[in-house]
Image (cartoon, rainbow, N blue to C red):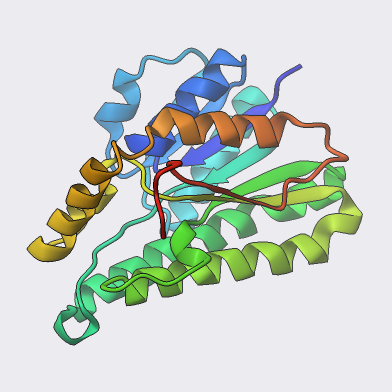
Length: 239
């Protein structure tokens, strides 16, 4: 019987695509994002949608409790919520740095903390954290974003080591260039336009559904198999 999947940042992009993919595989869903309407517009069966900020641990926990009361224990958490606002470090805005650090790192930790003890107690569970190729190598104009994604990779691998003996899996999915609204959060025009220009040059970025397929595949493998890290990029993407 397919069990509950929790997805953060589910209102658009990779999160929405992942929600569709898990729903097609027959899973009940808890969809979390700050915007409720886009999640409800997906019209997915057996999906509880909640407008919750991932930094709101109380609201996040309440949503999980409600979903588990309705659908049973959460077997999979996809920590997808994130922001990317890039600029040369000398021109960066501290408010944007704070947002990336809070959402990309603290939001992931909040999700992990809310589900991991139950997974350990049940001796089963999978946490998928969305990293980035920017958590594997650095990119100019992306210093803080890279720092947050390097942190996600390190956090995921460290906790994986801590809970592997309890049959709990942690997986890092690290996308390269993906066509989502994420890049449009960048207020530095040159950085944003450079991203889209390079995407066009290589024949286009990946689609969110490409990443969703990888997430579902890795999470649906037998519990005895853990894809620790997967980096997924357009074939023509060089860096």
